[in-house]
Image 1 (cartoon, one colour):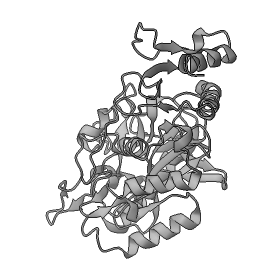
Image 2: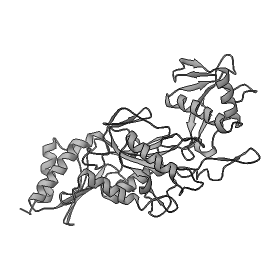
Image 3: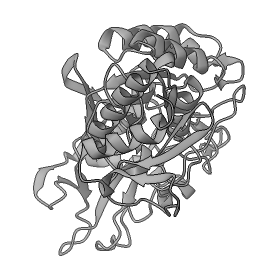
Image 4: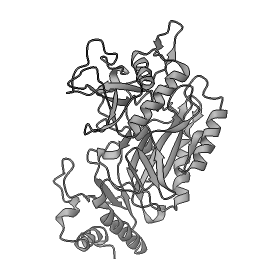
Length: 398
């Protein structure tokens, strides 16, 4: 068995002890420290973006990747489609997958509004080993549930009003995070355990250690997997690392990065991560899954759908402030959940004038054929667009 790059270049050959460990993992015979050892080895392979190549076939090596079950947080080996089949006697001939998770399209599941006062079930409990030696899947989590972490982040944004901009509603960064924590209080991680009790709104080693200490000392989780949440405005997320201005090295995460809109956009980003042990029996806590939504700036966490929106968005906010100084209150809202066209912004004043605008160059969905819908790309310049919006709301008011 070898560790290879995704271009098939050899990284190194596994030692006989490591190969034996992975055979036991694939066959499901490992327990306790040996299982923890195997998971740690596979985590390193996964974090480095490498694959495993099996030498059971002398001419064409079957290739496996290390996959993470998004619901239980457990690792399993998956045979890459299109590569050679394993030999008949090979321990890796069967995918040791957690059933339904392997074909889930993690980038296409729509986000949904999460009702308050209902347990979130963001990550499944670890599998238990029965007396007969088999895996007891009870408590492994509902595999049909997807993207709950992204849904939670978008729900927090909607419920705290971060997706609304108006001069008279402006809040500083401290107040914005305070609103997010207040909303999180309505969402229990598990029954009667508010998410705000195990939520840190600063991603750094100090606050990760503080959350770890609270989780390890907690008795409220009972037999459930202990987990908390890290929420912060970060610089970027790439190569299984979360970067912010306080750490050049970044923070590793082991699971999936869930993106609003399914496309990567440069930071700043409002990021929400699950913090938990990756394996049963481990006292090492780490970031598992991360969800992110691009925001306008570190001081103004209004959601941004694409990078191209940032400049016209700043202009619109400046224009809204100018109109407020003239006695015209305009509110700008971006529906982040449930909207058919996520790049749409809705501007309204005094409930009698409403204008929908899109700041993206290419349409992302069906566009209404109406005078009250405008696309920034159809205007000659930012100034022309600004004058049109100002005229729409100020005409007859001055």
